Structure formats: C-alpha cells, structure tokens
Length: 349
Ligand SMILES: *Cc1c(COP(=O)(O)O)cnc(C)c1O
Image (cartoon, rainbow, N blue to C red):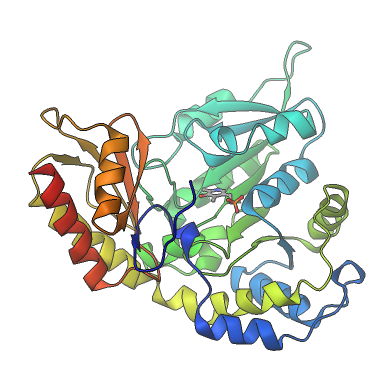
C-alpha cells in the first residue's frame, strides 16, 4: 500500500528510513566507477570498511539482504544439501523459498525458542547421519537479532557454542545479521565477536542504518570471490553503485553508533503502551521492536486499527492475527513516540 509518509510517524518497519541529509549530499558527490570491473572506489571503500568492522577478510555490496543470504547459501551448499534453519527465521519464511527454488537446497527447520535461539540439542539432533536415505547437512543459519521472536539478540557465548557444534560436525555457519549492529548495541558487544564463529554474515544497510539500498555479505576472500561470481549470475552486478555505497559508508560511520537511541525509544513506547488498556505486550524490548497482541475485549480488526492510527498520523502494520509489531528507527523521535502512544490510547480506550 502506498502512503504519503511526510509528517507521519512511521512504525511499520526500520526499512522505511529515508536517507539522511548527509547521505544525500555524499550520494550526490560520490566518486564512482564500474563496479562490475571492481572500479568503483566508493564501493571498494565500503567493502573494505564493512569487512574490517566485522573482522572478516572481505565483503561484498549486494542489492538486498535476501540476495546476500541466498548467495551465502549458494556458495556454501550443493544441490541436495541440507541447511538447519530456525522455523521463525527470515531465510525460512520470508525469502520466497529461494534456497530451494534456485539452489536445490533443502531446509531443515527447527524451533526458534522465545529468546530467538535454536536449542543446541535440537541442532545436534538434526544433523543427518551418513546414510543412503539422508541429505547431507552442510550449514547452520542463525538470525541476529531474531525478528519474529521480538528483535532479540543472540549473545556472543551462544553464537560461540553453535560455532563449536558446527565445527565439530564439519558444518559451516552463516549468520543472517540483517540487524547485527542492533544486536551489538543491545548487548554492548563488539560486532566482531558476535560474528567471529561464522563463516559468513549478511547485514542490511537499508534498515536501522538508514541507507536507501543495500546489504553487505562478509566472509573469507575465497567465499566473497565465489559470491561475486554468483551475484553477477543472479543479475546483481551493479555499475556506478558508488552512489549507493556513499550512503552505506555513512551508515557504518555514523549510524551504527546511535542505535541505542532507537532501543531507548522502543522502551519508552513499550512503557507508554503498558498504560494503555487493550494491548497484551510481549516482554520488554531489547532492541528496536515492540510486539503486542490485541486484548480479547478489543473488537476492531487489524485493518481497522491500521486505518484509525493512520487517521491520527501514525503508520503501523499488523504482524499476524490480532498481532502488531512497532519498529523504532532514525526518523522516530521522542515526540513521535508520545504521539503514537496517544493515538493508541485514543482508539483502544
Ligand atoms: C530484512 C531482512 C532480511 C532481508 O533483507 P531485504 O533487504 O529486505 O531483502 C533478511 N533477514 C532479516 C532478519 C531481515 O529482517
């Protein structure tokens, strides 16, 4: 649905973030070249900087997080291989089945716990034994922060444990870190440590980091060289992409350090909604997402609530039957939080 978003408080997602004025200026002035020839100095700088921040050998600028995850799966797996994924993971439920459709890769979903983790015993138990009937397990995927479980961060210790299990069993580990900098901010952890056990990691520039387009995929030099080849195959080889990378550089330099503000605003939104009848809140937010269900006595449908909120200047989206997810980001300030709480109080009273 198209919205004229000026003046609205937009809590639908952190993907709605428009570039900052500084980004627009950097985009206009970006030094560019043909990135398929690896000639774009701004893209090269972004890729070096992202690899450096994540403590990986190399990285690749990709058009979307979905393509980044798909490339990782395609590089790591052969047709018929199996991937252990969370049953609530973006890779499993929100990427159009790309791994199966395009890679012939077989997903093995196991339950995401409330805290976003996969139980270590479940991971161990789902690794296939060598048998003519079985697929070959190749890869484990984690998602950090775990979106559907509430934007919850997975800790350094947990990630290390999963990395250890993967190693012991000859498996690779990929982290869908669309919001890995939110996880680092939520945990006060170094992002390098959070992704250290992973063979590959994807993160989005285009969400809370406010860039207009793009994600990064990081890993070894060899992994990235193969991913670059497959990116071209998928039609993701871009030309003067430095125009976009210029915004991504500001994401890394200026936006990663301010995510705690979004987390604090998610907390105030949560505290405000606690005072409003009619909502059953999940646990207090640990990053930039607030999830709640409508209480039984609320008779409005999800769509009616979306429309009533819009009338009051707040854009929201439902996340399931009687369930909502509100996301804070760069363009939501304290006044926006108060306005949103006020609007909910008004329509749910
Ligand atoms: C948004 C998201 C992606 C995919 O990114 P797109 O740029 O939308 O393709 C992958 N994983 C998670 C957890 C996400 O939230």
